[in-house]
Amino acid sequence: MAEPKPEEISHPPMDQLQGLEYCIDSNPSWGEAIALGFQHYILALGTAVMIPSFLVPLMGGTDDDKVRVVQTLLFVEGINTLLQTLFGTRLPTVIGGSYAFMVPIISIIHDTTLLSIEDNHMRFLYTMRAVQGALIVASSIQIILGYSQMWAICTRFFSPLGMIPVIALVGFGLFDRGFPVVGRCIEIGIPMLILFIAFSQYLKNFHTKQLPILERFALIISITVIWAYAHLLTASGAYKHRPELTQLNCRTDKANLISSAPWIKIPYPLQWGAPTFDAGHAFGMMAAVLVSLIESTGSYKAAARLASATPPPAHILSRGIGWQGIGILLDGLFGTLTGSTVSVENVGLLGSTRVGSRRVIQISAGFMIFFSILGKFGALFASIPFTIFAAVYCVLFGIVGVAMFLGLSVPEYYREYTAKALHGPAHTRAVWFNDFLNTIFFSSPTVALIVAVLLDNTLDYKDSARDRGMPWWANFRTFKGDGRSEEFYSLPFNLNRFFPPS
Image 1 (cartoon, rainbow, N blue to C red):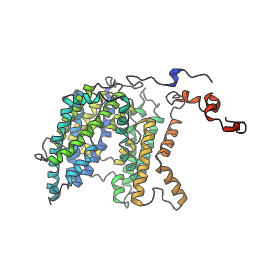
Image 2 (image 1 turned 90 degrees about the vertical axis):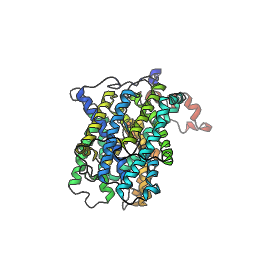
Image 3 (image 1 turned 135 degrees about the horizontal axis):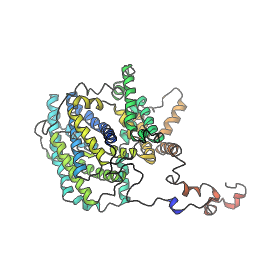
Image 4 (image 1 turned 45 degrees about the horizontal axis):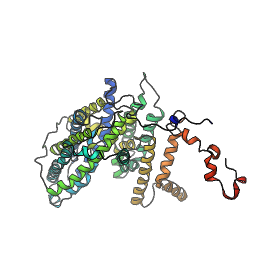
């Protein structure tokens, strides 16, 4: 076998990622850009609906309150995304709601002073105002660190090696909202996961008028098909006698968003009343702002790579953080019930579509603002079951990313299920079968190996040998492929005569 050439063994580091159809400052046709922007808007809906759906009921809010918060969050997300892409880092990043703020917000919700308010609506309003005040004060952290260029000084200590775990965990941090949520409605989640992989990976070479339509629009096509399927199951009464939690995650009519949404409503600052300020609330919120800052720094680095841009200079990162601080200030003024960060799922979609165009993200911001004002239409799309979004989160990060994500997420689902039900998800009359499946899928390395080997050996495996490291690996696949193998691995006492290696 011929010796591989040095350039076949490894990829030299490149300033800009190659292989994208459109980079940060190149644009698809207007029709394609609008469709891609709508796709980013749909993906951003997952977080925009999940956070208020969890927090508003804890505050004593009604479905009407939840709809207003969702509309407000989307409206401010659109504004913040435009500000970031125009004046911040200028990278193609969607600025969305952040789960990093959940801990201090839940702490505010459980403040004894607020819990003592008997009227639910008044408790909701006073809690919202307390959250607003904490966000307004805490936003000063990012504003000061960003515009003073202090964060630029800090980022000079960040090497590529140091940023690898940050960037990886920004994406993998979604693992508890991935397969554990898919498992709440397997009959919708698993088909969505399979369909998205099929369209975006196995059928990506299908072209219509020289456009790779299935690769480029896999998300919106998959969601449309599975959403229609979910609606069919709902209309046929498939969930009529199922538990409440199953209905909430599977039915398309349980969110109560469409009926509660107004036709037209423009969010405005201080719409919930004057914010209230408490030092304890603000101090806890500052920690969330710092977490958001670190998460966004990793996301900016990843977005730059997936948009085929050069790594952002330190002062650009600092400028982006300053504008993100302005975004958190707007969150506090409008009352979005959470702070802002870069939407990592939308960063993943840049790589999945191979389109890193800034214009596409700006169009998605326009959709956020437009549909947040036209409440009924926005609520229609926001009623997509959470399970569908969770399935997408599982498969946005390439072969290695998908294997590692599912290697974390699937066992997490099995652990959560077993802790609640006291038995694994596999629960048939055949105990041996249950034990076999539950043991296999409890293991993160085993799940990762299954996924990685399956994808690695079925996705363009002949044309991507270099990317897979096969030229380097080939010499070591047999005992005699490399002369050093005999030195390292021969059996003692000349036993190789009886057990000759192949």
